Amino acid sequence: MGILNRMTQWKSKANISDESDMNSLGSVKLGLFSYPVLMAADVLLYNATHVPVGLDQSQHLELTREVAQAFNKSIKKEYFKIPKTLLAPTSKILSLKTPSKKMSKSDKDELSKIFISEDEKAIRKKINKATTDSIEGKITYDPIERPGVSNLINMVSAIERESIETVTNKVEDFSKKELKDYVATVLVKELEEPRRKYEELMKDPEHIQKLSEIGRDQARAIASKNIKKIYELVGML
View 1 (tube, rainbow, N blue to C red):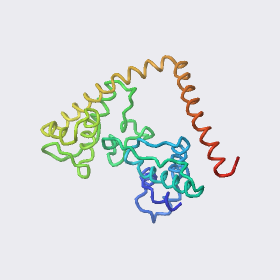
View 2 (cartoon, rainbow, N blue to C red):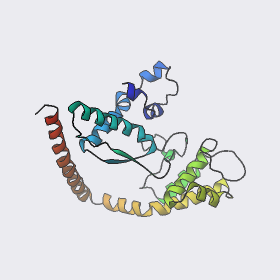
View 3 (cartoon, rainbow, N blue to C red):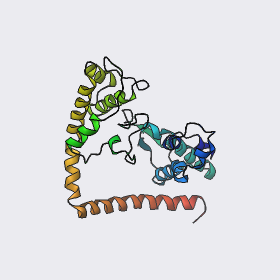
View 4 (cartoon, rainbow, N blue to C red):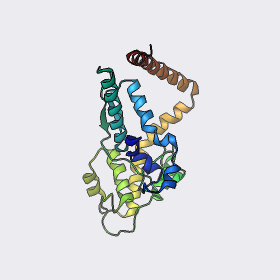
């Protein structure tokens, strides 16, 4: 409970800024609060060595390592490998409408997020309606004072594999409309092939089912072997 209570992600998703607000804390669902435990179980069940995550999930990997070390200590054997965190090379992408929180597929506001299945018209519409700011002059990267504009720069940086500084220098003389047009063009080009593949796969549900079953069987083989060994180590077999 103590470790979970220090996690920031569930507080962010539950919109809690003041921990003295007992009504807000009391409304947090157990699934959200205890999610890091489930994540730890998922990682350790496969005895993973490296886990790619976004910056907002790095705290959860710290818990996973603590659980692994505690288990190893309790059985006096180094069974679990201590998983290393592999952070994404770019910053997390934020909501198009509320750039104080990350972009999420579960967000009720359809204009806040972009899916790979969306066409050019939908993408341009959402980017054009994205929140920016009223600051005049050059386009600058400032996540604190200009989160909306900085979020758009982050998107280009992630797609073009260029540094924030390089992208900012490229767009600094753009108007906000020109910046949005540029971001939309980059996104449309990047998502064109994934969207084509998505549409192709959706036309063949039997193939998707087959791939799902193959993945399931491969995962189950690894998990079954590990869980049996874990049961043996704790005396349940």
